[in-house]
Each structure stands twice: as C-alpha cells, then as structure tokens.
Image 1 (cartoon, one colour):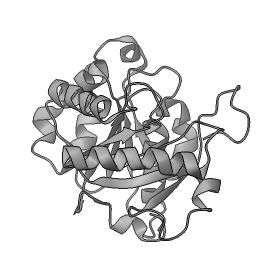
Image 2 (cartoon, helix red, strand yellow):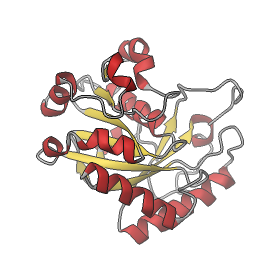
Image 3 (spheres, helix red, strand yellow):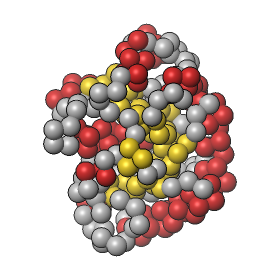
Length: 244
C-alpha cells in the first residue's frame, strides 16, 4: 500500500495526524531524502496547504535540502534553513523564520534533523516550543549501515537523540538499502530487523521507504506498513543511475 494511494492517511504517523513531522537519523540513513519525499507527498495533496520543510541538519555537508530551495519551491515546498553564516556553527542560532514556521498552525511542517548528538543539540533548542505543539519525531533506520545494524545499535542511537534533544521519538521509519546494490531480498531482511527493534522499543513503524522502481515490485500484502516510493534528489557520482 503506497502512502500516495491513501493520501498519507492524513499524515497518520503513530496513529495521529501531526502538525510537525520530524525525521532524524544517522549518517546514511536516508532521512534527508525521506524528509523531502514526505514533504512532496504533502505538497501533492489536492487542495492542501503548501508545506514547509525546515533544514536543521548541520551534521551532513553533502546532503542538504537548502541546496534544493529553488527546485523544491517550484514543486510546492517552502524551505527554511539557518542563514549561511550559521551553517558553520556547532549549533546555529534560533532564527525567527524557524521558530515562526514551527509555531504557525495553518501549514504542515517537516523537519530534517541530524541523528547524532550535534544534530540533536540543534533540535533541542526548540524543545520547549515543540513540547507544547503537536509534533511527532520519526527515527529513520537503515539497518545496513554502521551503528544501526543491530537492535542494540538502534536503541543507543535513539537514546542519544532523545537525551540530547529532550524530545521523544514516536515512531521508526524503515529504509533498508545498500544504494544501487539494493534488491527486494535485502529490503525484506533489513526491514525484519527494523520491525524487531520496533517491538523491543515499543515503537510503531510508520512506513517503509523504497526506491521507486523497487516499490513498484512490492506485493500489496508484502509489508504490514505503508510503502513510500522514494524519488532520489542526492545521487553521488560513484553511485551510477540506479542507486537507492
């Protein structure tokens, strides 16, 4: 079942519609691509308000939504990011545009956050505000990457971001891939680990993200969770054309 087919079930993450949806994850988890694709699905809802995508990822210099401001703007998404000078600070200053985007309630907000202590500190600045708002934080897991290849590793990563940001993770997002080497068997194996981790941590799996051509091969009953076809925006030169 594709998220686009059910209109995101009205952004039904953790069984509740959320005004602010946060995606956090370790390097290589794919959380920036997922943040963008999720915002695109919101932008494509007939008659829906124009979503806001906040780029709070100060950790990863190679994959930043702020580099796609013009392209995403044409696709119906407004990107809000720290000022250029603040991109080079450990913790960018709280800027009015970010705070204003979070506090307004007319438009859905998607937040892209780095999943280590440094990234969590950037998010933690907004914890007092977010705790009074309708937010959900989703931890993106690629079980085929270092640090999140075991239930223990996933638990440690979540504990770190929760402790540092002072916010709670409400769901996992499964993104099992090895770039262009990804096949359905690898996806199924990795997703099984994510489901086991979710059960251990008493968290739901919000959805599974798959490269669009792989998502087209999935049977309707293959996964319990909705499948979000993933359109790639950041493809490195060494990946070739069929990366994931």
